[in-house]
Image (cartoon, rainbow, N blue to C red; front, side, top):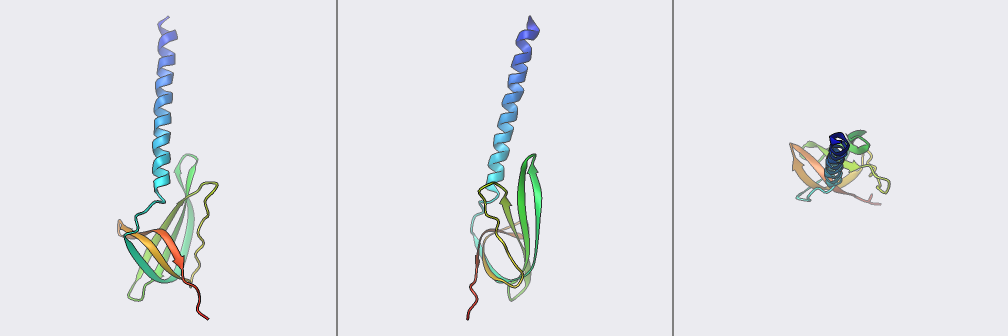
Length: 121
């Protein structure tokens, strides 16, 4: 008799915990693309590397790391895009001149938005 009552309660509790954890991870995953635009970095892209990284079970991120020549020095910038069905992955190529908006986080510039400069004729 006790088992018929306790087991469903335990299962319901662990189901509730799992749902809450999944919701917290989903919110954290979506927040990865919302970076405050506190600084601007402009320069020419020297090198681009891209990779796909697992965030949580079936959630993945597309990460672009670029080496930018700003005129004074070379810096590394990082663009993290959560991979969803409706998302457009930004394409960066070496040699492009870009203006990057984002902030400095842990010694690396994280990008929220990138504007590519048009080539002048």
